[in-house]
Image (cartoon, each protein chain N blue to C red):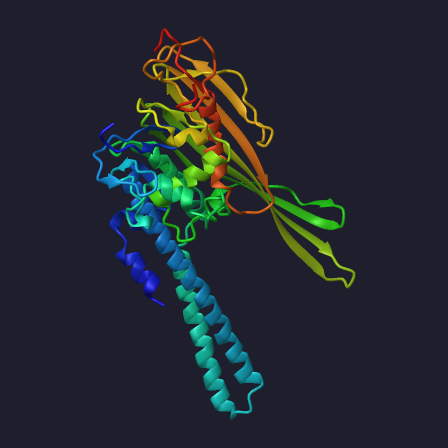
Length: 293
Length: 129
């Protein structure tokens, strides 16, 4: 039960600070960052397993209290005693669960950021550093709320309240081995729709729906001595359309790309979405012009 | 090329050039410590291991990495599947090899002896002459 708390205490001071602040920010080599992220992902996995175990024990404790108190043929005082112990165990487990929940980190971390950095490492020299800001808090928290609609009515739903959250959770920049400079930004906008309707039996039922819009924006600055940049669109029919701008400078050409994704759940986006946007920028690279080469 | 013959990178490929420590048992290329696949007990290069790996035939990184380590073996395996799904990486090195031709690698540098015919064919493989 205490393994997660012990695991937290055994983390490096930098990782403990990251969990406390719910943020990883700074400049790291890819290798150092990955080692930290892997340790954090492993801690989060253990923490998640422990919380689900505790939930089972909590349910068991409350079930035991109810069964012993109301169904068991044992003497009254014995039933009362066992139930009191079970309820005490339930409260204790709830406190532990609450403590462990404070260590919980956003799913985006392990599902998107970690594989992305592992890929990005391949395009960096060992000594090159990348600068990141990675928010570890979940998207649905009060500080990320940007507005709540007035209750309105639609169809069978007599009361709908939409709450919008804005979560700019991951951005960073890196100079790559080919001397390109990559900047990226991931922003989730989530609409939590609370819908209430009255059933035929007169009961009010409430549903919670989530709609997520993810913006993946990157900027790729390519050195003219190694690359030219085509302004023509190389649009793939399988991929959603991207907003793209190309700027040519004396030493570098910048490709900026932004793509939006829609989802009806809070699931993290596929990390391939971010990789695809960067590769789309690279698809515009052409051989350098003769004057620049 | 006397050093490691494997190529580093994901969006663009470059020569490794580190001193080689052995030879890949599959492709016979010289490979350095960094390019030897840990999962093959350092007998194969990471490229060959990725190509021979059959169990994780998916391009979804989350599905392909059940143990959450996202190590270099995983990255090379993912790179292989990503290239197979249609991305043609850019090669910026100067040591051409036919090994990567299957990915339709875009090479920007001319090889020795090649004549610029003025064509715009930049998607040719290394030995696609």
